[in-house]
Image 1 (tube, rainbow, N blue to C red):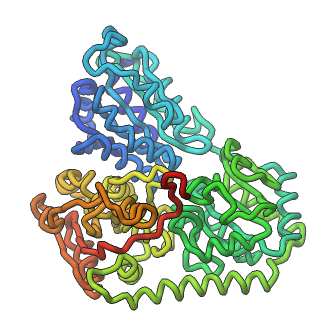
Image 2: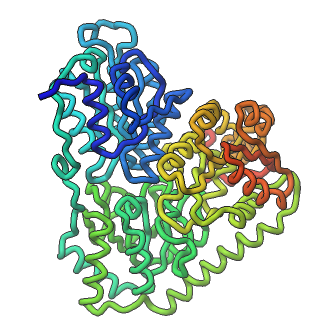
Image 3: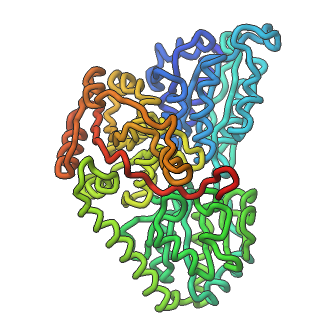
Length: 560
């Protein structure tokens, strides 16, 4: 059998999983991998400007494609710079494979140059963190990592491969399809749990469906919509998962959670049965209290991972299963047991709430003050964005308004930092998303502070011709923190005000296009021009520096 370098073995294993891009910064510890790519153009190394962005880009690609996203960096700071991006993938259950070229085995545990315990460092934010200890184990451990990343509730993994392991030769491993080394068939639900769920739905007066990210990962979006249609189930979505169902669906009320829809919150408080599909009912969806989910509300929770079933709220039925398989079984059982649609009175109540939300959002078109309020910017975005646009929303005050105001028609089109809350997320994630779905328009939405955290990747976008549009709403401050100081610290502002360049000029310095918009009627034209310009583009909009979302909660020296 032919012998190949460890670096080439890594490349062949990634290609077998359909990986087309590796994100990172060139480093001496993994040159045996890069040398393989000199001749093999089927896998492209996207050389970025900061390793954090490499992890974010891999995450964006994985979220929109469902395939593993991969990054490859060097030891020491190359690896430590990945941590924030890998943590974002962890909270999103995104299958990111983080590969690190480690120090020589002979120098480990000697406080050598760039020698750190990366396995311990990454363990809290990965499903698996492991070091390859000899060349013969590259194939085994890479497949172990990919199995962990792509099985059950997906998530990131770390594989550290010492530079001398990559440079040694191994027997060429047989290329195995995924089904030969990991389970690829989804986990079905238990029949008794489905029968009990059907019984509860038949008895419920105010059933409500909550769709989470597991719906999208399982490709169950169409089945959730069918459940709603056939059984008149009003729907809301978990925090940051607005694209789990078509937002124009007549039974969709709005998104729940922090910065979500008050109408969705009202529906959740009124429900006597929650059918939770693919959501762990996490912090920013529920706040772990009873502001949305009332004590005594019956909950059916369906999740592919049993760890979080009943973890925050007791359940009437817990179902550990793939969301698509559970929906198929539930549709069949509801038909067999003669379960009819939800009571008409509840449906009318849900329709009223949906109408109230639509009217509230439409009324924001009357906000005419300048600089624009962020709410008005979102009115124009709803009018201008094509239905298939992928939107990456950053953390921060101005992007926070988008959770309740953006509209989504298709799955895998809404990317958010979720419970990580990481600033600087949206732009590099959008770049990865564009590579994963090049046919779709991609928009990153940022505040001014968050954008500058990874703005250097504009050079990466220009060099690799990744034509993403970035909208920067500029209020010259850290808005979320300024909102807390305004509401809970009597306006005693400190550390919140910042300065910025003109971002449209910044874009042109890098060879991208830049647009500066001051009036609402310019937003749509600027976005249309930006998407059509054939380059990466930035649209800057100055916004009202005194307009902030109301903080959910805060504590100030004993005062809540």
